Amino acid sequence: MAEATTRDLLPVPQPPDFHPTITVAPPSHDGLHFWQFMVAGSVAGMIEHMAMFPVDTVKTQMQALGSCPIKSASLSQALTTILKSQGTAGLYRGIAAMGLGAGPAHAVYFSVYENFKRRFTVEDGGGGNALGHAGAGVAATVASDAVFTPMDMVKQRLQLSSSPYKGVVDCVRRVVKEEGYRAFYASYRTTVLMNAPFTAVHFSTYEAMKKGLSEVSPESAEDERLVVHATAGAVAGALAAAVTTPLDVVKTQLQCQGVCGCDRFKSGSIRDVVETILKKDGYMGLMRGWMPRMLFHAPAAAICWSTYEAGKAFFQDVNCSSNISKGT
Image (cartoon, rainbow, N blue to C red):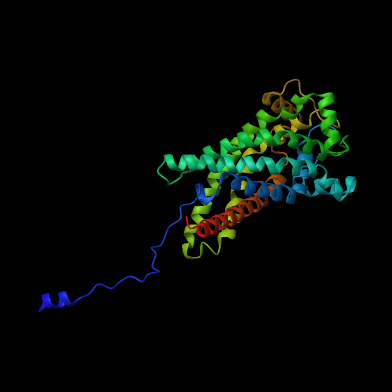
């Protein structure tokens, strides 16, 4: 009986328009092309730095030594002094230099980071780890600082109270004439030494926080993606800023030396600058501006990461739609 039943079963033909589902492989890491990382990073960097520029101005003036700095370590007094002496416009002096430098620098920053993160992820079996993220971050900052340092120097000189420069062009022209091209990179070594640990702490903390926050409520991770990126970025930015404030003070000293009464150093060595700071202000001098620095980097990182991840998501959707329409 069983055999008769089996023989009576007929195969059901597939409908003529049936096609198996085709899975489209992403064009590259995270589904993005190299240039798309650059665009997303550039937009994120410009929005981040220009939104937080007034806080950066306060930090710069608090860190400079000589006749031009604000002597009080109080953030509120520093802000009041700037507003009284220069008005609201004083908080935005040098923002053009920031805009010119932040876009290209962050394009390099994020594209290099993603490239190295992909390599380190592949090497450790696809899982990723804090050391890999830190290493990718260090590689990113070495490359991006080479692009950003000249405009950062111009920006900081324009931010000083009683700055002798009329604007970006005037500053660049006078620095080249009076100090030579080397002045634009006087702080590059210090900047890299500061940003290497900053970025290592920043990226490893961000990736760990992002993973941890996503695992807290995985069912709603997609809906809360913006909150996760902003929160992880804020924590990472604040922690990295606190750790690296002493080196940031040294960087400001080197970039602003000889301007409106600020000290000029015999050499560009970090040791020379640190000794001068310790002699004038003691160890607390190395932490000048730590509060506005943290107040800058926490929201700045939140803005930057959420904007960058939103940009990546946009390009991922564009690439997916393009691949589907091509039928590849």
